[in-house]
Length: 425
Image 1 (cartoon, rainbow, N blue to C red):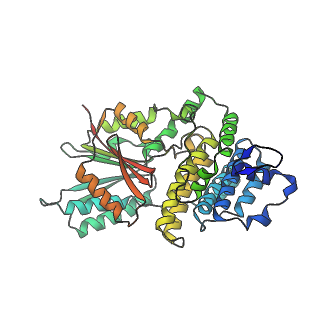
Image 2 (cartoon, helix red, strand yellow; image 1 turned 120 degrees about the horizontal axis):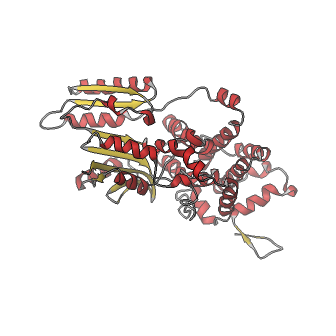
Image 3 (cartoon, rainbow, N blue to C red; image 1 turned 180 degrees about the vertical axis):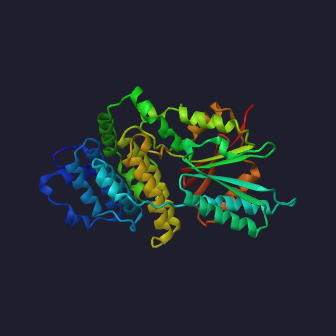
């Protein structure tokens, strides 16, 4: 703890950094930045990110620019956990500022690269079906994506795998956004056994209700942003130290008002309800839903920043513990997947903000209201899943059962939830 000579009041490390960067007597922070140890550097990065986000939220762009310049001296996409994570949060905050100039923003973001990995799941299914004693069934997989080239790539890989294993296979591509999907194009035939797999997709439908909810319940985001910044500056040193090393932010919990302060955090969603009802009408034998087990759907920038710092710390930390910093594949995942998600959470508003991750309990409520009944994973299924995680040769990955569903964790921090459902008549 830090104690001022003229006062008996103790301060957290973040408050110390706040005084250091704001005091005119201390001058430029550059000389002492190079002397910071890893944890001290991480603490200062947290302070700068929170301060920068508050400047952005309140429209103080000149001060935000100063903070971004300071962060750029410390953050690095190939550094330690906190440096890598800070690099993408910095990019997201800068992108939010650039949106004030639509022409410039569009020019700088004209090239997008898509990271595709969903076919890996289907290849595993094809391989499992090929091993059935009674022989494989005829399999038709319908892929839904807004980019045709992604579907073409998926069709090629899956067809190649099916031919190799001599499985009768057909791929049905549908070029469409999920929110615009016409279920008639799914071409479900009478007597067919239908299974639905939604991997990290349903949360994007929550964006469709954004404008309607905002009109019904306007908020003073400036006041809320100030509350969240003040709370962050009072966090104790052990909590923020854990954020930088193996046990990031275990002591941090969402603010008590984070669930109630945002109109977007309510369970009701016209678009999601309508979509789930349409799926129920197809009478699937099984529906598997995988979602990020996080709370990134707050109404204010500061709320989303705090929540996403907490959850992405776990994701970046698990890669730090299991993959070399020099790995090109790691860099791709962090930049093209995590980085793009962070950018959408932080930089976007309204219907453009698609990454609206929510906790498992909310998806349970929604699916229950849509007349789906939970199907608990069998003991054998849990055993197989644990063996799969053990195959990564890392003790940090854990699985826990929660309300008949499975939550995959890094240490004790939830990453993803997996739940199975059947139509309830």
